[in-house]
Amino acid sequence: MSTNDSVIQDVSKEASWINVAGLHKIYNTRTGGKTHALSDINFSVKRGEFISIVGPSGCGKTTLLNILAGLISKTEGSAKISGSEVTKPLSEIGMVFQAPTLLPWRTILENVMVPIEVQKKDPAKGLEKAKELLELAGLNGFEDKYPNELSGGMQQRAGICRALVHSPSVLLMDEPFGALDAMTREYMNLELLRIWKESNQTIALVTHSITEAVFLSDRVIVMSPRPGRIAEIIEIDLPRPRTLEMMSSDAAGVFVRKIRHYFNAANVIE
Amino acid sequence: MKKLSEKPEIYLVPLVFVVFVAVWEFLIKFLEVNKVILPPPSAIGSSMVTQFQSAFFWSNVRVTTQEALIGFAAATIFAIIAGTFISQIKIVEKVALPYLVGFQAIPKVALAPLFIIWFGFGMTSKVVMAATIAFFPILINIIEGLKSADEEQIRMLRVFGATKFQIFRKVQVPNAMPFFFAGLDVGLLLAILGAVVGEFLGSQVGLGSMVLTLQYNFDTAGMFAILLVLSLMGILAHSIIKAFQRKFAFWGENDHIVGT
Image (cartoon, rainbow over all chains, first blue to last red):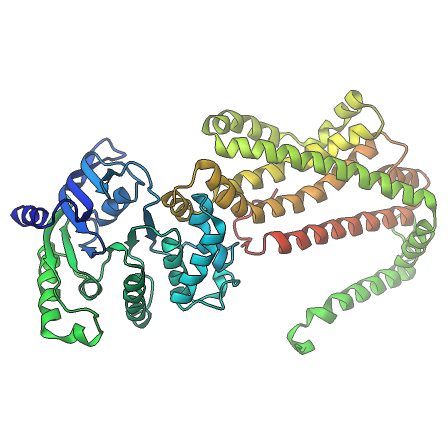
């Protein structure tokens, strides 16, 4: 695990916003056995950094995200966000889910307002922020529509607005674009980078797509399965702002091949 | 505007009615059926016209409606309270469930004589009958609705720091609304049934007792007229519930609604 250790040393304590050290997660299975979902996970993320977590199915990447979200407990080790240990969901966090997960009985604006209501924040300020985000996501004019009146891509953009409305410092994304077609997905990636540039969150994205991870991230955490471990953390030093053309460059190809190598080693065809 | 040929039911439904009534009328005349056995539609129609002009008839409509509505309201309130506890507290569900299954197995109509003994021949016994029979479908739909909330929606609310009560109010309750209205729809019809059954067993007033009086007088056409009125009340009840449902549970899909 020399690569992981060097990463931790590279990032000074003050600058790291998400800090995961010696993290283990062991599930008790129904039959009385144990599943080692995560094993000795170490990494840290700087404030404003965009990292992706990739790996074949069963490598525990969603488990890792759920621990950071405060939804499930860890078995051992520590997971800190802005210095405090995550034991329950923090208002510091916004999350985007696999499905848009909008409430069908609420309008788009009312959906975006959910975190404001739940956390009992100033509704006037929240409303202002919600409208600003919807505008930023290109959803102005759709505030009073119901979710089923919007396309999948638009719904997911509303989901991103909801994740950002309470101004969290960390945005966790759990395969947010997996359900979208390839064209919409590329477009959403560009949109995400644009929104990120404006709001400057620290983002941790779980994805199945290697190219998506390379395109979006400052660093990509590659995980391997059974038990879920970090295989390597790869720094993506492609210049920003990123463009779709950049993805066909040799530099990007090198990163994609390097990551794919781990997937092939795990005998998983992506 | 859609062409008539695209929605043939618009004229087919009344047409079937007209043909049915005409054939009925004709067959009664042609086969010379005794009108005590089966009256012709014309006799039922004229009986209805007579009833509609009588104050006695309308007072009976009012009594039955009142019994059904009070019973229905009581059933709804109890179902909401019981449904909330059963769906939210595991131990309550586990203890209550076998009793509920047992209760459901009782043919509720058979309780009517008992209610007459307990609550007398007045309105109370009918209200209790209506409430008893309407309670179950409402309760089952409330439980099902509250428990079938989407796990991802609950996870979403938890991530944003929602308390158990906030999850109940913001996800589980709205999610239960389409189920709730489906339960109310069935429940209201059953409440009318309960009130009429109660009246059959012992009452001087109400549409149920009117049916019995007409039976003693061999006024079969009159009985048919009352049955028609009861059906119309049912259709009206159904449309009112549906109108509320369209307003307050417009997102609902009806696939998973639990019936009676």
